[in-house]
Image (cartoon, rainbow, N blue to C red; front, side, top):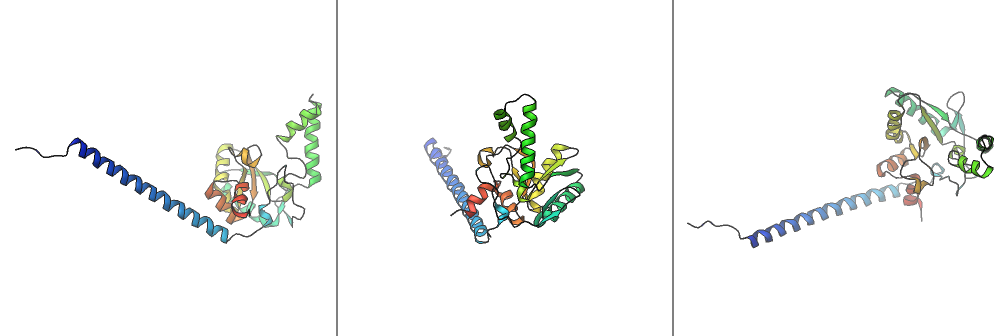
Length: 230
């Protein structure tokens, strides 16, 4: 008795049909994912509220004139805007409860304080033998010029890890959003922020915005452009 079976041509045709079907299913899955993503984005846009908490500060865009600040001490030395002072304290408490030890090394600075810090760094480099131009260029890599620092907003804090530096930084980067803070200048985003990577500088943007920025894995610049432009 002859054995029945598909010819090589029919097998190839059947394989092409399966490949086509799988391709169509993958395309449909991608389309559904894109639609759901756009719906989510649209929902965020519908619920957005314009706020000075999202002010973008850079060398091109200085600190806004009307900040609406009400500063509050978070320890014996540092102050923050009272809209985020309690949130930072909660973040630090959670960090310590998770076994990490960190402290605030910088928070609010006035423009005059920022100028004093900037000029002191320039003068120190000149004393070490650098010419003034080189000293200013090197300083700009480490310190924002007066009028262009987020610290003047009262919404930013530098958090220093006392021990287990990398583990603490990883924890903060992964959990800060839960308290309304974002890692402001992440690695790999220098072309977007126009700022070098800073592993310990956190910026308060509010819990809703921080959650969205975290979920989308974007910067404040990208978030503002996506939801607040036009």
